[in-house]
Length: 164
Image (cartoon, rainbow, N blue to C red):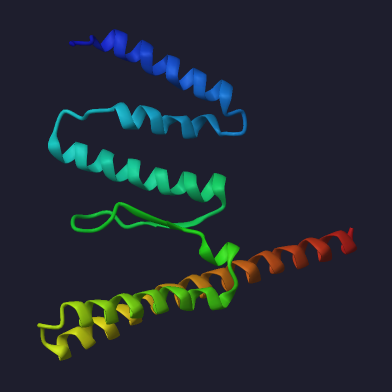
């Protein structure tokens, strides 16, 4: 079916208006994500730039409205973005669950498909565990820094109120 630009734009405006009416808490400028999703640039390089902006904006929306952590990774051979939340809901020790699950998985692989080199399997185990632990520690440090920033802001507001 060939849809003219005029009909397409009318449909897009209708979708954006419906979203604005349903999502009263959302900033109207964030609705532009819908327009970005429908957009098609004239050149391949501009399409790449637009896709990167779309990916970045999507991660920002998750961070803004769902109070999640996230990063836009982009580029080829990488996920577009990562959004994570486990350190908000689970205690510190829960990060060890990922390592334990990876360890169990690797032991299973070593037992069931043990024809490979044992040294290479151990290297995968060590490197994989290090990466998972690194992500967990990085998330914990970010959380601590954010909490400290929030605490500093609260202290500054308290001092300002006392001085007034």
